[in-house]
Amino acid sequence: MQPFKIALTCTFVFSAFTVMAQEMQLIAPMSGTSTFIGKQMVKGSGQDAADDACKAETAATATDTALNNGARFIYGLPCIEALDAAADRVVASSNDSIILALGVEVDDITNRDKRAHWPVFRLGPKTSDEAVIIGEYLKASWRDKPFAIIDDGTLYGRQLAQDVRALLEDDKLTPVFTDTYRPLLERQAGLVRRIVKSGATHVFVGGDAYDVSIMGTDAQAIGADLVFAGGSAFLAPPADGTLPEGAQFAGLSDVSKSTDGAYFAALAKAASQIGTQALNYAKDNDTTMARAMTAQAFETDLGLIRFDLNGENDRQWFSVFEVKGGKPTPIQENNG
Image 1 (cartoon, rainbow, N blue to C red):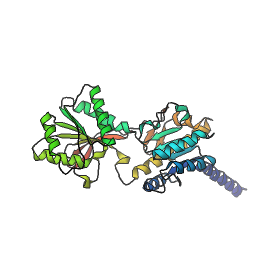
Image 2 (cartoon, one colour):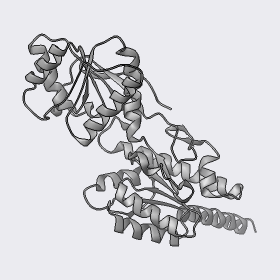
Image 3 (cartoon, rainbow, N blue to C red):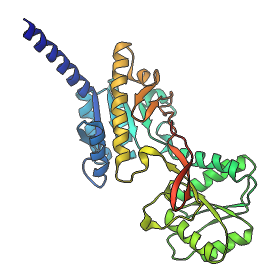
Image 4 (cartoon, rainbow, N blue to C red):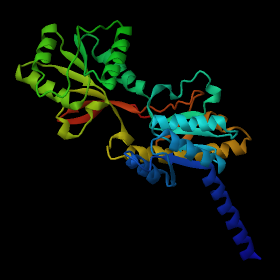
């Protein structure tokens, strides 16, 4: 009789795990140019992924299949087109299901007029977080400094520079010089001379490591002592140039320091931990998945994470770094 009881218990446990596995579905790019992201998500979560190929049509098909199989917690979908298509399929279904988007930084994925009908939560930072952390830091450290704000004209660089400028001007801090420069030039001496002539001693750059390294070299050549600041594009491989000593920037901290995809593995692992806890909460409290996602804090390898009613997480993903001895060193930790 005892062996039968053990076997029966094992059967129930196996069935429970099977049901949980069906209720959680990872959807990620397993084909196309973003395959490396999908592979890292599979590695981190320990779960097979349905392929979205970073395409809307493929994501919609994968989501329909997941919903038909009883998925209530769908996660992954790091590409915005695929995420939108998947969310539309969840909305159109009668399932009590939600989506946890991993690594999608576009602000408005959680800023919907009809939030009650938009089942998307975010794990990872949003675009505006970067500007906020470096902007708030500069409000204090550049308060009595004449500064310039320049950008490279790209969508990323222009938006970052505009957001930081708005934050500083809200505190009545106005740049003495602004400009949009041509990126990827071998020299930026003319730009540097104009900055120096304006009286600026500090420069916020909406641009990347290559251009800032050129500016730093040209400034040094004419004896100008400029302090540069910027965003996460400053954190780049050595081949992209050496950042000037003392440069300050907002960079994704801890899980995101690696450029080999480990960031996505860490997000997926935390997401699977959140999914398990959310499903258990919904069952134990006879409530919806949306309620389960906002009613508790989740214990994950990334720390304690809570979601608000808009679907945003409360983790602080960025730290402010300063280049010392040629290496980025945290000067303001913001790990939640």
